[in-house]
Structures are given as C-alpha cells and as structure tokens.
Image (cartoon, rainbow, N blue to C red):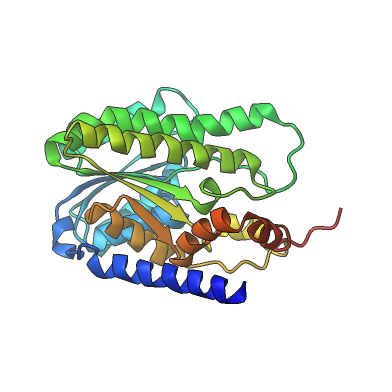
Length: 287
C-alpha cells in the first residue's frame, strides 16, 4: 500500500511538472494599458492584484464597500505606475450594484480586457447552527453578483478577446468543517463558471475563463478567523495575487495556489477516508 501511494504521488508530481513546463509563458508587457476591473480591492488579495496591475502599467477600476480605503488604494496604484486608477464604492448584496460597477468601468475605460471577480461577504468560522438567512445573503454576495457582473461584461470582453477571472477556493473543491455557507458559495462558483467555460468554447467565443482555487492565504480577515484553530500553513496574498493575474493573462482555465492544492483535490477522490481523517484532525476542536 505504501509503495502504491508513493507511486501515485510521484505520478501526480510528474504530471504537474509537465503541465507547468508546457504552460504558456507570461509577458508582463501584455498588461500595459490593459483595461481591468478588480472587485474586493480594498484589502487582501484584491488590493494586491490592484498593485500588481499598476506596476504592469494597466488601467484599473477597483471596487469594494469602503470609499475612503478605495481612494487610498487607487492613489497608491497611480504612484506605482497605473495609467489610470479609478474607484467606485459598491455593496454586492444590493441587486443593482454589480451591474452599476461594470457599467462604470465600461464608461471610464472604454471597455474591458479583464474582469477579476474576487469579492466575498463576511461570514463566521465555526459550527453551522442553522442560519439559513445568512447563507442566502452570502450566496447573493459571493455567487449571484458574480454571474450578474460576468453577464454584463461579456459583450465587451468578447470584443477585446478578454479574460474573465474567478477567484474561488480549495473549499469549493472539497468539503471542510466550519465554513459551510462560504464553501457552498465557492462550490456554486466552480459549477457555474466551469459550465460556462464549456458553453463559451462551444460558441467559439473570444472570452477565456480562469477559475482560481486558493488554499489558505495570509489576509488579515482569514488569519483572524483561523488563528489558534488550525495549523494549516498560510501563503502570501501578494504571491497569490500575482499567480491569479498570470492565470488570466495566459488564459489558463484552472489555477491552483499553492501548487499542492491540486494534488490534494486529486487524492481526496482516490483516498476519501484518509482525506477526511486529515481534514477533521487539522483543526483544534473539542466538543
């Protein structure tokens, strides 16, 4: 059994390295002047993506709920080299705001080359206690607003041969405790945009879709929730942000960051009992 497992892991690693070796190369110059809309950009991964795009000389519209923080991020983007850096405050739980944000970006930038969907609503980290209303609200923020914005932006992305980038999570690929509402929204994203990829391909669309499955990232909001609860390592937001940008620029369908998250998703299907044991014992929980 041990020999089989070692051989299996070795085969997965070889396949992964072969895939990376043949992946298209990233040209930073391709993002100079690119018209980009980044959601959830007042902090965390979204903020870091805005700064990376700025360094590449892109034209950026950023959005989140906090107007003053957005203004500060936009000013920093200009100082880092962005050709344009505009902001619009919005609440993705309000039905009209997702489309309003896209319309603002289309008007100010004259179109879109990249739509980066990254925002999430605040949610608890703990045992689910039957709060259906919160799950319904979170689905509106984390899922329905994504499909609203994607549909609104698709005609412009079609014209520009652009890219739609969806920031999802490893928790949208495999189940975990303490994150039921959040995980549900990420599974929904993966299902919807994975299916949309097929439909666009069948229609010979110019638009690429990149679905980014992230492990634990060291954003302030994530660290506040998991500190002392799990020993799972966290990875830097700035590096995650750059990997997401590269995935969109090179039109990759799937991104897994850090790299071993892809191995984990494969192992869970082959050895579910082992995977479930590891998951349940990676948390410091006493009934």
